[in-house]
Image (tube, rainbow, N blue to C red; front, side, top):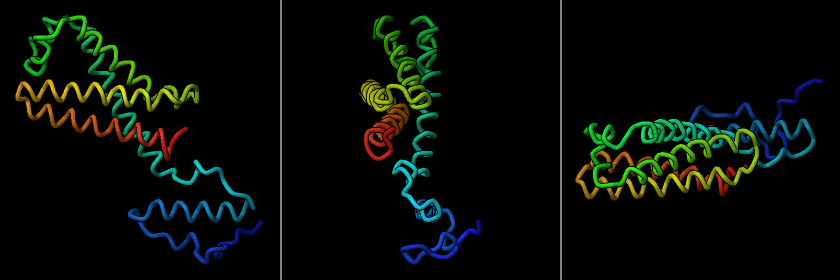
Length: 175
């Protein structure tokens, strides 16, 4: 079977692709050509694979960070945590709350990845992202009250990334 590299319906060819800045445009042109060869439209979720990959990468990074941070809160006692200068925020909080935050972070990390990987209860992915965003909002307030501005910046970045994953998994890149 010969591959027709000529344009299909819209007069554009997949060989018209530009480098990286137009990645989505190139991907769509290639998918248009595949649809022409197959003679049927591809499922819509294949249309934006590039952004889906970005969402998976961000989800993986968030999951790794929250898994480590939550595991540390679960494994160490309050005294061990407070002894670390970066964890001074834990001083006024009861140990049970610190353990709860750690468990929520671990659950959020697992919820960002496993439902999507196994395609089971995929609604848990945006729910986990929203839960992590709420935790980060509380962390930003806590660090702000203590004047720990570098920690505020980091928590706001993590909050924004969690909101990004939630929005993408609820909307355009839902499972």
